Length: 128
Image: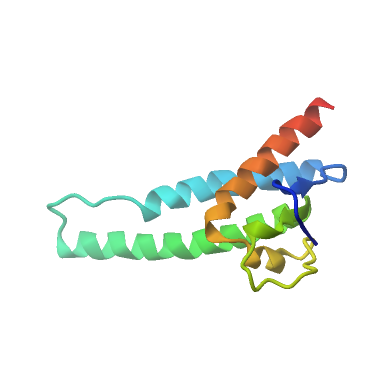
């Protein structure tokens, strides 16, 4: 379901310690692989060093994609609705947010905003 509100909604009532551990691990690994993917090589790299750097970057991109898929599974366990204007205009009306594939309809420029809103909602939830 997409909401017409300005912010997504979340439900953390069934979040487990395993979910929290998985979220933390995923975040750390994403950060590490992002550093590899964006690493700048020195100007004086040999052909072999450049090949190794490019290979590491390719591996990093694969790992980042895997980790984003894992993160989407974790997000899907908490998200209940996302504003319609955050979605591709061609998104189906009744998306099932418990299905991680539904997050594929999220506009790319809203991904960080969704994660930030989730963090804010989690902080607010833990205060209650």
